[in-house]
Length: 83
Image 1 (cartoon, one colour):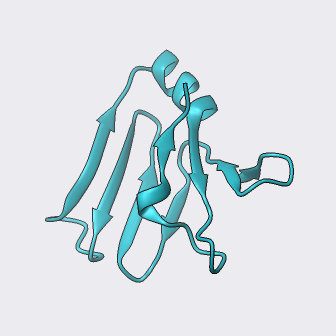
Image 2 (cartoon, helix red, strand yellow; image 1 turned 45 degrees about the horizontal axis):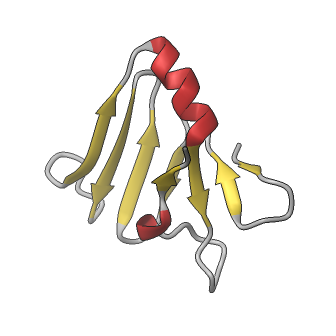
């Protein structure tokens, strides 16, 4: 499950974690992260990042998703990497 960072809007998402909204899907797998738009998993790839095991461990520590300011869903535009 996602881990909230303290009491902030930030969440750390582990590998193999799956988030879906009405317009997009993000899938965390063991060696890659994929974001699909419009729920068409075959055609609309927004992000595809393939990583080695060590890179994935680092990715799990750095990948943070922020909640939408209006509700409990995640806003795709607010996903980013932290340095």
